[in-house]
Length: 212
Ligand code: B16
Ligand code: MG
Image 1 (tube, rainbow, N blue to C red):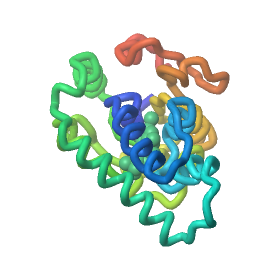
Image 2: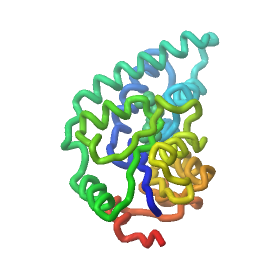
Image 3: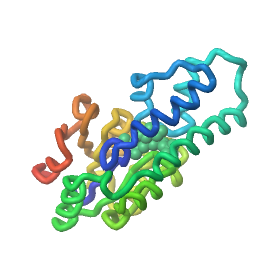
């Protein structure tokens, strides 16, 4: 396994609570029911696809595409304000040391995230220099479970998908890795998923895997 591609939200940083708070404010304003269970369905899913999931509980007049874009923008403005509170302390020492050690062992590292805020989060948390490439929501047209974001990451690294391991917290992300021809390590909910090749309890367990 020459390269590892890391999902961002739920693997390197934990912005779920920010996503939840931002969507909740928008949903409450529109009188849409929204809870943590629905929020869990948004993991790894793009902003517009997330909005469609939230709108399953919307019973008002049909919304135009422009109105939906305005709602997505509203959520993102709230989310970005919350992201501004992030600091390097929001990345654990375990994550930083695991990334450093993987690089020392000669692996190439990339980020593969659906988020269009990826580069801002990497800057806030001082993680940019830990990676050789970044593939994110700004360079894809289809979000996970489509493999595009991971295939672009492999391309940016100059590696074949078969030489890449994706590290994910979402089932949609594991599906994306597998349909892109990659191996997948799963943490959190994704550790229990049947398609996950390497279930992880913690990220440092990557250092114990026999990549062959
Ligand atoms: P944004 P990941 C995903 O990031 C999040 O899990 C998902 O909840 C979010 O909707 C998506 O990014 C888009 O984020 O609104 O910032 O573009 O898990 O793929 O790193
Ligand atoms: Mg994730």
